Image 1 (spheres, each protein chain N blue to C red):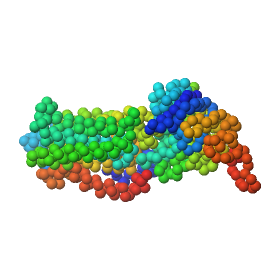
Image 2 (cartoon, chains in turn purple, yellow):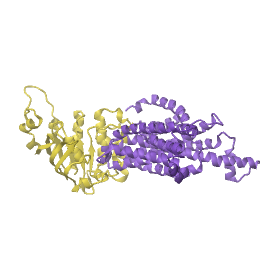
Image 3 (spheres, each protein chain N blue to C red):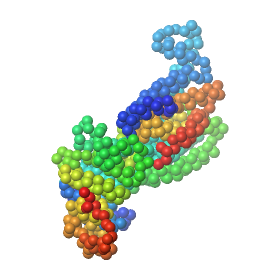
Image 4 (cartoon, helix red, strand yellow):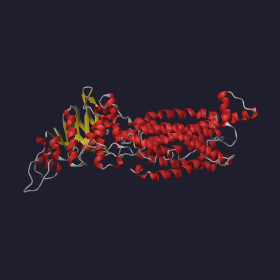
Length: 367
Length: 262
């Protein structure tokens, strides 16, 4: 969250070096680290059950044994095998979606770009839905080989395939037209959604329930096994992103000018696209289509710290992770013991807040 | 030294630049003039490595085709005609992007202060904290020039001259700032760098350029010193306009030439 109370001291500091927002960015990143820590604690201690994370953690830290050993064992199970994997997944997915959004916006030089917009998410969804619906029949030989990894792998390759097709369509004589890619992405997204629609039409009742919940997005069903399958992909993709920051900054001046400044633009575009499709594909695979994080988080941060990607990318990772954890905590508790799809929470909380920020800061957003 | 031999550029099957020979020496301003659509900008884009071309371009003796972006960025900086930004950068942040390659040529510790110095040089003192998109077209153009200056602040690096490629650097500027920008170019050349500039103002060209390359329908129509090139015949042929060089207006019609600047 962008905390308004920090605006005062930050402004005073900025006058020392006018137009330099790096000091403010560092403060915001520090605050975001603190915010993430609080979000993790909140998620750890809240949930449908009354399990006491405090007892579990103090037992783990200090070796204290609570009075009721049976209750303690149950609590410990809930914390280690339900809440912790869920939190880890939330951290990974939130960071992946927010950073992917920021990178896409930098790459397309367009504040509206989002993995959802250019068909990466739609391609991943198609892959995942294909496994849910056809996993037991047509795709049975394939799913038998990869086992539980079938869904994440299908989503990952669905996203990657879409992106590579896009890239081929938009590249002529070694030059990738970002405008063509955006338009082609919209077309491909429509195609992927239509194919997904056909699969949904073919699905039986049980598959439909799976699909509905999955398409709205959820961190439910997080297990250490799932994290082990997609975690490395997301972590690798996220680790590569900071190396793109300087290049993406230069790209804001246009592709030709970025090249004049010494940025290997073609390689930058390729790395960014592969990284984003990996991160988004893996995220969609485990949590479904969680909207809004990729577009809201980078925008809020640009208003607070400016568009410098060296700060924007890490800040996006932190804020994306925090927001998703908080949204998940709400999703788990408001209608407990049932659960809301997390996509509904992110949109209901995010959309009005985003509109309010836009209205207040119009002058900065309008170009 | 920048040398282009027999450079041609085709865009979508149409020949835009045809067999141009060009050179720019360190210590000199090479001006490219010509009517709209004569291929000036296209030629400069080929020289910058943005467009595929046939022929040969050498930058300080090295073939441009064999150089990586990071290598060409050390040798030359490019000022486009106009630059729009996709995100709300402050003026300082834009100028700092000129330092992204890290070869400005000043002592390592001084890089941090370069944006201020560059802004002062283009007469934009105190603009560092403003948002780029809130500035006028002429001010934006000068911010971009400050960025370009940061990239090649030292006109000579590692014993090699560096170059400024300026595409219509003064087209949106008032007369005072036109003079300031041409003075920056002249100063850059005097200190051992080279300048390639596309210009429209023939008086300013005559005053600043050491060598003029006149383009017409994608070809080189003439080349030489201002005295050699700017003749009644050439101007009529290239610009399709009957003008006479060096003739004062009749009667008491006022005229203001950049040459009269004190």
